[in-house]
Structures are given as C-alpha cells and as structure tokens.
Length: 111
Image (cartoon, rainbow, N blue to C red; front, side, top):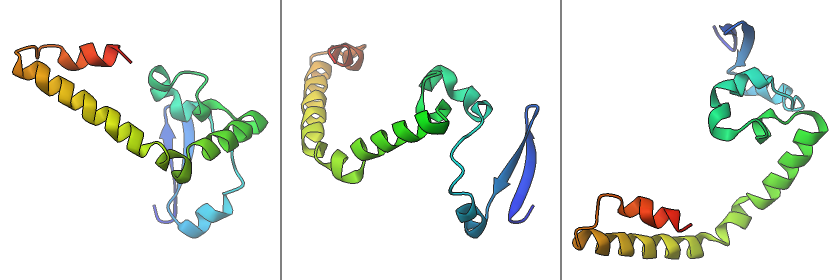
C-alpha cells in the first residue's frame, strides 16, 4: 500500500501506481498486457485499441485522438441532440398510442 502496490490479477502480477508524480514517470510506457482487458473482450472485440500495442497502437491512438477530440466531437452535438429529440418525440407518440412494449427497440433498429 502507499504510492505503489502490487496484486495478482489471475496468474499475472500487476503493479498499481497511485502517485501522480510516479505516474508521470511512466507516461512513455504505452504497451499494455492484453490480460488486463480480457474481461471486456466480448464487448470491445479482439481488435479494439485496448489490445493494440507498439507502433500499431500508437498510430491508431493518434488517429482516434484527433477524431474524438473535444473540438471534433462538439461539431456534432447539435445534430446529435436534434436526432435524439426527434427519437424521443416519436417514442413518446408511440407510447401514447399504446405501442410501448418494444418502441425503443423498433426505432433503434432503424439505425
């Protein structure tokens, strides 16, 4: 315990850093053991960025960071909010008409 701790994650010994200063020293470390994300593989898939290491991972991360930056994402907020508002209006009308059992699923299938 303290600024650094180790524990077993299955058969893999893992080190956890809680000190911001010590974490800054590790910023150059990019590669992560796939075992850390094994639990999430059914949800994110084996080709997810979480499993990408070395130059492949660095290149993909650079591309994703650019397209998912606050500035990039904020360009789509108004359009996204409009679509969500229209969807909620449609679902609300369906519910008022008694079509509620699978209203959301039906409209989401349209996407």
